[in-house]
Length: 145
Length: 259
Image (cartoon, rainbow over all chains, first blue to last red; front, top):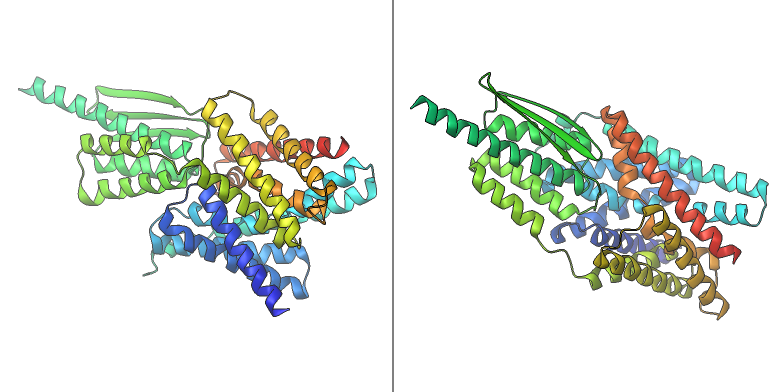
């Protein structure tokens, strides 16, 4: 269990860093990007233990975007740098795939179920981003980091 | 004497406008959200004491109007047809705008710096290819795949990025929709082949991992941010872009599965 969790977190770190390379993030920010993604995935795993997938997505997104904005002030770069790659682990890739697959084999009921599940996850991510971005920029800039 | 001063002022104003429109264009192109573009233009213009600056920024273009001493008004329009995300250059321009304010850089130096940033070389292709593979493999693992699934996803990610880099180097002008459909198709076919010959255990996990590098993360997150900031038009355009890419990938994968 514990080893599995550590493996998962390591994979999340690796995935986030890989995506930050893909988006041409400056080299000195790779580690911070990785930390953002790993924190998000950790929250996702913890919340998912007790609650639904949707709620886990929401909580993880809130943490990722909040961290991204915090780190943006600390490292003096736009928050996009950390947010875009950090949010990738939460993207419901498997849900998207399942939906396509169910549509392709013509199983409408299963397609509806997996489609709805995916849609809920995406909506949770949207809501999470919105929730953090309504916090005024001044509050973050005021922090002495 | 007065005439010469005026002439200089006009020249200075033109250069400032060139600078702010260049910075705005670059920011848009490298994946900044609308409010950042507007804020940067405003700050730089204020720093160079432009009396009035008026702008309208949308996802694929910007209008900047500067106005000084009653008679000098000039409006420029810049069309930004394609977005190629590059967060390093985005950071550099952000840094440049901060330096203009804090270190009081003259316009000419700032223009030169801007040119340097835009001309700077990207990472070598192999780095991108490798990271695409590693990213896909890591996602295969996150979704619960075995080591073999990760390997399949890795191969797909590598081939996918090689394909995209190749097209980019050729400057092939293919519509994005078609490109994503082909990408999805390519990934699925490779994954199915690898599955058939017994490399991966779970076809679904390998494909799900491998399509992740194509997911339009920037368009999606920026679209939401634009809407939160009240730039509804740009936000809608970006979200539409994201949805279109999602659908294209789905069509590609669906086609591949049908074959």
